[in-house]
Figure 1 (cartoon, rainbow, N blue to C red):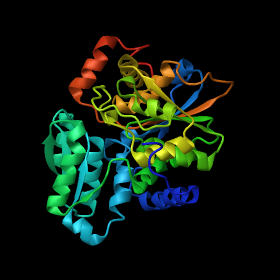
Figure 2 (cartoon, rainbow, N blue to C red):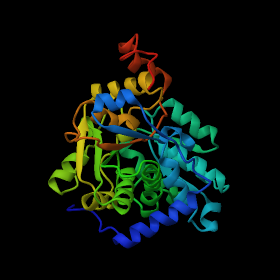
Figure 3 (cartoon, helix red, strand yellow):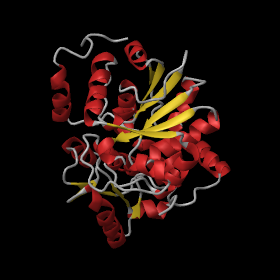
Length: 340
């Protein structure tokens, strides 16, 4: 598959983004943009953290899910919606569906975080567990066809892309004149949406996507120009365990993203620990991918007074997983009680 689906025109992408911004106003949290002097020193640039770990449902996914469900016909919402996800999109779909009194049926892999599965059920959704992340989409399609449900996809849809891109619009409002925006990448919904927003607001701003080395299909796709797969990713960054970029997302990424990078499992864990101890932020491994690239000095060499925006995409981390990540850093990384 060479280059994926043809995306909408630039004008249509911007119109979708602005419509989503209006639709989400007063519904999605306008999450804070935080700073941390210790992170600035470690990364060699001025860093602005967009805290989507504090979004409704604990992740940026609410933006795209609400933007999509809000545009469904009322008759479709009455019949119900379906979604497949390892966790964050599932929670977002459950919340968004509930806001419109739509029945929600979710398909999640058996190895999904129990915290995320329980949260989905707590939001009133019905959850079906399947054998693997690779099987989620097929099982979801079968359930939707059987019960007449509308599938709300996790990333490969114009409304999802537009909703996720509103995070970057807010970041660029809070921290003007950014030289670069660094964004975690799984299926590419957040990265493609943020890239559209960044290039619209400031065409000179570089956009960089980051994914785990264990699931580096995005890097390989970006480099080769041909959509690649990583069908059995076992990264600790569970939100990035997608088999491939979405076709539409890939097409948008090729047009608007400047570079793609990957980070190791240890680099991801180090970033989670750093954010916890130094910035006092609870961020899940997937949400810390961009910080991992910064701390590992994988971003382009900084220049004087460089301004870097980073999206912390989620904070839904299982307590046992977080404890295991923090355990090697007994006593803190650079001082448990340091916050700046």
